[in-house]
Image (cartoon, rainbow, N blue to C red; front, side, top):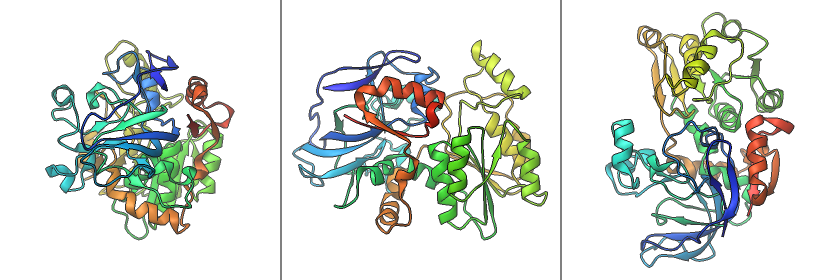
Length: 389
């Protein structure tokens, strides 16, 4: 079959790889009908995430049709349309029973390696480094889905791929980012980053009843999409984010802050950002946490800083003293996708939200290398790419 494979920094290739096969009785094989490039895929593309090997099949946002099931899989049948969450979950361990699916205790095939990096293992993920199990990803014609009697979400008739594809990652990720803020009446939510996750965080905050949503970015097309979703916007390369947030909140700061950027913050003309780039270049720091610093400073005392943006390693000059003394709550996680999918699928079916709004570019999987370059460079107004094998 054909797939997109990682071969190093900025080197994604469309090439032939072995077809997947059933390896465990609970498996399923899914023929991919739609897949997407995620912002966190760019961390692989830019060479910032450890644990990749040349030839790894990438991608963790995908859906398709079940074409084969293992003998012990009682959930799926051949012909089912499914969205596959990027987190691989067993459904049986202590964490899964508590709904903490992204830290499933069983699905990471390289648990010892992950424990060395993070102190404990987290769940296996599709197409996302050998620290998370080294599973082949979904930017491919076919995918083997482990524990397929638990994770996949069956899609009702009448809902297009474009409406449901993002149930596998970015819609639940944006939703969880806001849900874990514990919104209260009258809250202002400030969201750094108007990429796809930020866009869903904006709309989630509106649906969950935020009084005011403020979105921060420097790309005009993304800011325009944020305004269409109900946000007041701040263009971070033209005005002071901190000053503007104070103006918009009567001098008190936002109660809830969301870092939807993560490890590759592209701040301009700031001393901390320049230092981050220099330290990263000489391997004294792995991530660029400008947004996390700014969110901690901006957040109102006793507020919440929610971090859906991916971080990979060691951060420098994070103002933890400010977080402690202001009594902030910091909540972070890879997304517990299956915790949210039933509710979000219902909202899509009822017409509360059409997730396809975020798609700006579509094309064949064979154009994947070009789309990666476009998405990375934010060229041609690219916010979200969906590909078809």
